[in-house]
Image 1 (cartoon, rainbow, N blue to C red):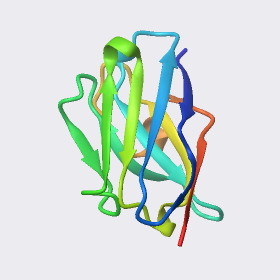
Image 2: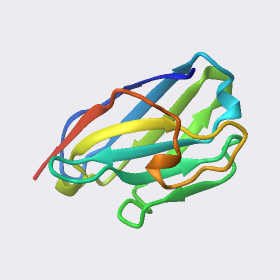
Image 3: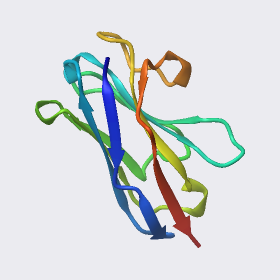
Image 4: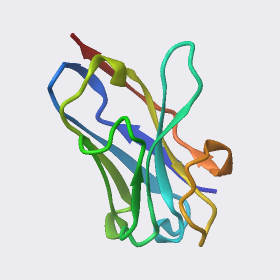
Amino acid sequence: QVQLVESGGGLVQAGGSLRLSCAASGRTFSNYPMGWFRQAPGKEREFVATISRTGTITTYADSVKGRFTISRANAKNLLYLQMNSLKPEDTAVYYCAAGPAFGSAPSRAQLYDYWGQGTQVTVSS
């Protein structure tokens, strides 16, 4: 089992920044590709960003490309999402997820095995 706990969400004005963190425990963090997903009220959970086990390969949804940066610190069992130039449409609950051990980092939420409880991000206009 992998336990994931997100933090860093909050209320921010449009154009502002937030950094989300995800603390992992339970198994060897570096064995897992990781992802960030988000879910707005009344909408499906959607892919935001993924990162490979070593951190060398990242992918982003078009809606966040150039504004968000995913990174990880394997020695600290931490995953990050730096969010800049936030927009009201970024408002959602943000989840971190651990993918298949020793695998690639898929963008489909259904392929992730472990999930955190989520952290709320609200961007006011």
